[in-house]
Length: 381
Image (cartoon, rainbow, N blue to C red):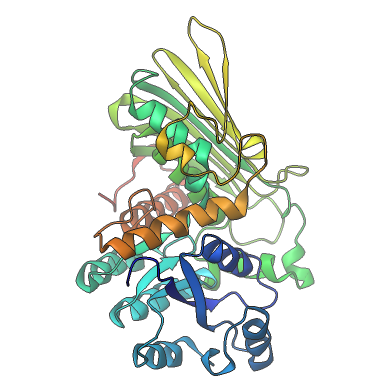
């Protein structure tokens, strides 16, 4: 790809009724570095055509299935260079692997795959293909999350001692999957979601951001997962104790039955000299509390932030940016890496993070079910 020429994007999934598909499309195109040119948006021909028309994709590039799309786009001189995977979890592996093998970069919604074995297999495919692979763990794209990471990496807080991360939602407090709710339906189905419910849907976000911000890796865990709503197969409430490299302790909560909670992601990291707090519901602020000093509230887009945090904001401080822009930061970083021919996409979570997150899900689910107590994370580097 020539610098300045948008990276050509094809999307699999994301048709009418999808929440995350339009988010990916808006984020990908926000900075002009990527252009959506093709897609297999839905198995339903009418919905597929509807999505293409709404998003400015030529009718002959709205394909009936992703295999047809990959073959046709690979044969074009102006074919897609990047594939976004925005399907339910059970299709992530097969679509990503096929796209990589067709010579295209891949950016996938989380989690990487349906299970750990697939994630490990996909790591092999990524290595063999020599193409970029990224995961949209969107919260790593927020400027103040990146600032928190920089503060800890600089050693400002001293050695990390404790990490607390909570991601609470209430939208599954009732069994709405039985009432035809599409988003709830596939998340409650093990065949489509995998063995994890809340742990696989939002727990992986909490796990990823804990490691991303703190800079230390989870080594052991003690999990208590439950399906609180009667009749539900997969977990909807998760409580996990963590032990990190370097001796830090932690707590992870992921719940979708916390009635009244909206999208309550919060991370707190404490070191020897102080601690910091970031909350998604006040995402333009980062609070730093010192052991012996005044509390600081840092604001997004301010001149005193690190270069990596400033680069994540597009408008002056005090003007709100949010979810779409955080997604867009991941897409922009990915596009810049592809344009430069780099072997990695910097801060964009890669397949190694995908493998770790799937190891976390499987270990937490199995350890909780067996009542094993403390267990090694395993399954990931």
